[in-house]
Image (cartoon, rainbow, N blue to C red; front, top):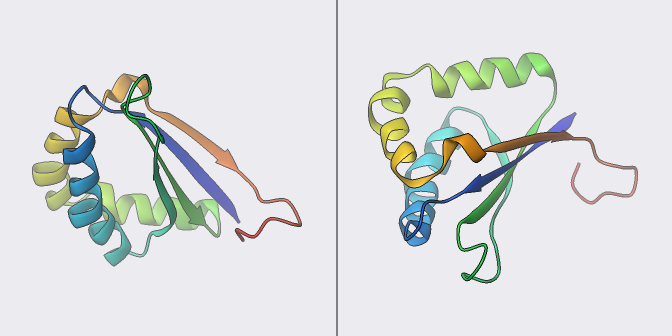
Length: 109
């Protein structure tokens, strides 16, 4: 098992729009395909890191991750509806994805 820690820098003025898109469309769509999202976060202060959005997904194996990526990112709905809107709100060149594994005492497992 591993987690994927994803950090996005939002474009100026897109904080509220991004959260609405994530919570009302992207997360429900990904969850419907079997993704396990264990957290979704914003930076506490709007100033400075106004556009920092972080979310964490859990995978049981690399094979599961590959299958879920295909189930989400190879769909017409993602490519024609969601992806173009994502590009309007986040700086894709600053996306940071880090794989992390829980320690023995981690509450996230």
